[in-house]
Amino acid sequence: MRTVSVTELRKQLPSYLKQAQQGEELLVTSRGRVIARILPSEDMRQSAKAKLQEFRKRCRVGDVVSPIRAEWKAKQ
Image (cartoon, rainbow, N blue to C red; front, top):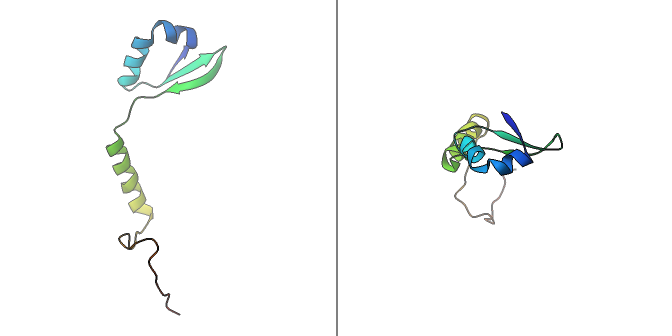
């Protein structure tokens, strides 16, 4: 993870954006304090698929086809 000041970021924006595009995370500082983070873009489909696979390990999904307001009776 690389740290860059706002001033330096403004001077070299295309270079820093290319670094982020290549997978590097950048911390942006102002007066020595971190104010922002620039992250590489992620493949949204792949990310969603990975999250679903993680949920499968911990959750069990029942009937997801029925309408939300469907009437049902619980067994007593």
